[in-house]
Length: 215
Image 1 (cartoon, helix red, strand yellow):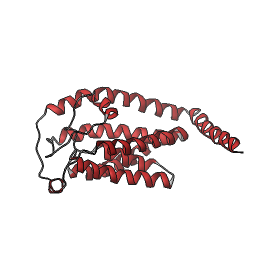
Image 2 (cartoon, one colour; image 1 turned 180 degrees about the vertical axis):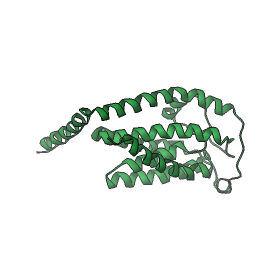
Image 3 (cartoon, helix red, strand yellow; image 1 turned 135 degrees about the vertical axis):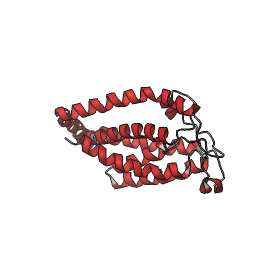
């Protein structure tokens, strides 16, 4: 009985992909977002190398000054990638989730390039470098610390929270968003404004991506 239920579930996932793949609009949107993300990711190392060499301002962040800094890279890494793996599983199960999440990720990439360019910031006082070997690949394996406004980690967690449908998934993703935000401040990896601004930008881009991905 359990094997039969599992087969039915797997067939359901396959059916969803088969049905969506038959739609030209779905294929066009999926192909477009994948190609553009590839281009943006290819440009990322050059952009982050530029902003790392650039001089900016140091904010007087009273909350950050109040919080003692500690290296919490491992908890950040574990929480972040557990939620991302959950999102990947849901994307496999639901192709429309993949389209909306993919377009929002793309818009996040582009908007962060714009916001980081327009808001040049130097390192927060007491910053401890965040060790994340997976994320480092998007930076061209460079030591990047000035990608500050706004927080990509917080935005990614909140994006997944918005895209998920199951209430237990959403509860975990919301917990992860709050936890990541707090831990980034403990790490002194971001200013408070970087963390606070991330959900607002993400929500706007999520709504926009739903319109772009609609078919």
